[in-house]
Length: 257
Image (cartoon, rainbow, N blue to C red; front, top):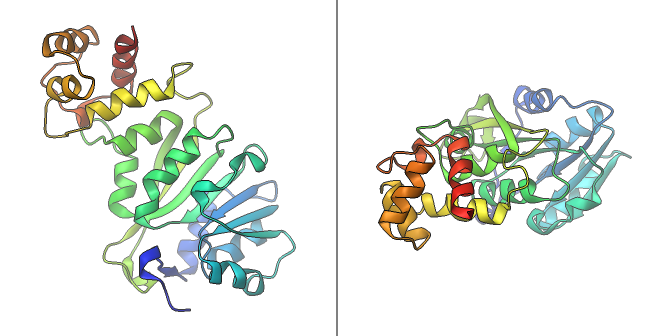
């Protein structure tokens, strides 16, 4: 089937890569799996054979209509819908997400999964390699995406999937990133709206020091911002990508007070 460039469609047929996604997600007959963007159903076929039930959500109307014919399985449900508006609370607790997703969807999808009142037990995503690395980054290379994901999930990187294994091949390689839900989010009972207001202000300009970016983003004087940063044991001339998760939490608590 012809791909739609505007939807970032690239079909993966490599059996080892498809099975690697199932292995990293530890799919078993006890699992309810949400597959996002099943496309031609190559991964779907593996999932219906290894999971208890599979809910596939496909944005492309033509692909959604054809999927049940391509993958014939009693434990498969296909829904034509944008995953960003899909009701995750309709799924059973501790479901698993497995998906090969386009670049443009990654940040919004991780945010939606994280902030849902019914988040997945895990999310195993095949994304552009550089995006996978951003999600799993450590202090020194952090971004708004990595902070958002890691407040809720513990990330680990899986196999690299070369571009030539896709049809049509994308411009760069992809990589599997596995997100395992934390038993408790790191921020505890802190308002997520407040926390990420502070984080977004910090990352509003990665090239600026935290003193400058937070002062502008939170509309505080530089003197007040300096006091906040020093109270959180953060050097005002540090840049946002250098902070540990715990430092963001400490800073957000001080801003709240």
